[in-house]
Length: 253
Ligand code: DER
Image 1: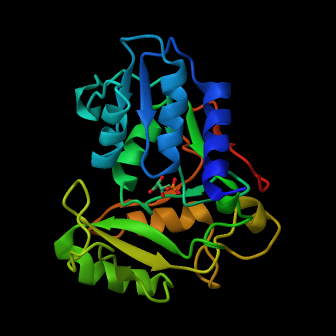
Image 2 (image 1 turned 60 degrees about the horizontal axis):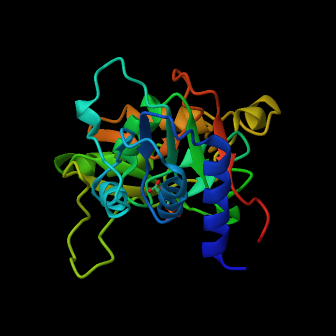
């Protein structure tokens, strides 16, 4: 069947197994798969008080067009945790690490994912790879415009072959601006080792031998001055997430 039916099936399964109609706050991610998640929630949501937290302009539109009620992230009090957050991904590895940011919304997506008790990644079979950067070749990175040249240089020093500023595919020829008014740099790296790869001696994973482990590269890029956020979501450690669960059709429909 089609990719769209795989996305829809993944979304239906993710919502059926995880959405509680009595929830009060639900995070909604960005992209095309999330539209099916909102559709599936709409079929179920009975509680009129339920609030949906968007991860950017497109996500808010999806919530509003479904007739659901959005609430902005910064209106949530410090101690409120979202009951659950759903989002898509560009690629997911065996340890449920994700590459995100294909839709240039990674910063607010990470804020919402970390604010949720449980994060559900909804991904069709194409996204399921043994290592990140197998099928999706680049790490999306949100960068302050003024810092782009120095960040590109730092990314090369970390081993990125040809990091590039993302220009929108639409008629605009300038760099893509995010909801924060920042730019997106897409940085290619060789496929990222999982922590079990490193434990099995498949590489050092610290860049010294040309290999990077997921968390170490994420931290190294996040330390570059001018980087706002990196499109690697790993384990969401530090969050009371029951688990970063990969929902979806892991085999072709
Ligand atoms: O940008 C993101 O991280 C999104 O979640 C997105 O890349 C997933 O997009 P898709 O559901 O349209 O594949």
